[in-house]
Length: 217
Image (cartoon, rainbow, N blue to C red; front, side, top):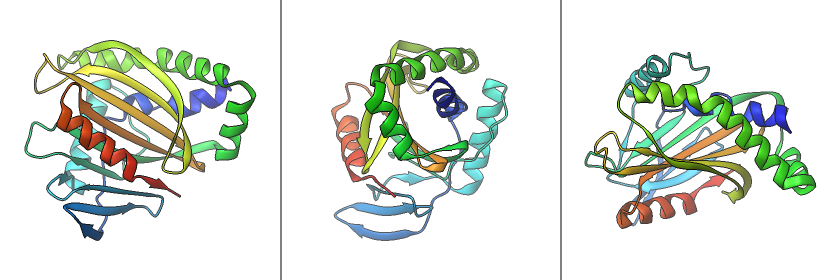
């Protein structure tokens, strides 16, 4: 599983990145339903800010400068609570996988030895993450606590999950909890990153509502 774990995590550390908003398909009860590339469906509050193409490009370039490593993909969607500073954010990226890793592959690996899958994921993250943290430190962002690793369902699929804390760029006294959901879909991976301010009940509720709305095809 180590090679697969490395493929899963590589570039995941550097997904501070870009986004594309797709047309609204429905709107009910203050929420807007969006479909990202026909693969990920989700609902966000109607008053959230959705990044446009120019903003995604700027964020991508900033992320590359920050960590000093070029990004091999552009995220497909990003939205954040409004007004700023944002308390909850989501990004959806699609990253090519070579070789392809299917949901059946993931489930088979997890069923055979879940503990080893998580160990490989953790080992690979710990090899890759120092570069990210060194880049973020230049902007005063620090790691908070220790990362955690899990396998859980999201949107009807099985995800490998990496969660970590970092200081908030708006308020260093606050911790931003960042959770990455790596969903292997054959020739590409859906990387769904949801961030929220810890101990903020409104942000936590928004995170939970957002996560529960996700459907992955």
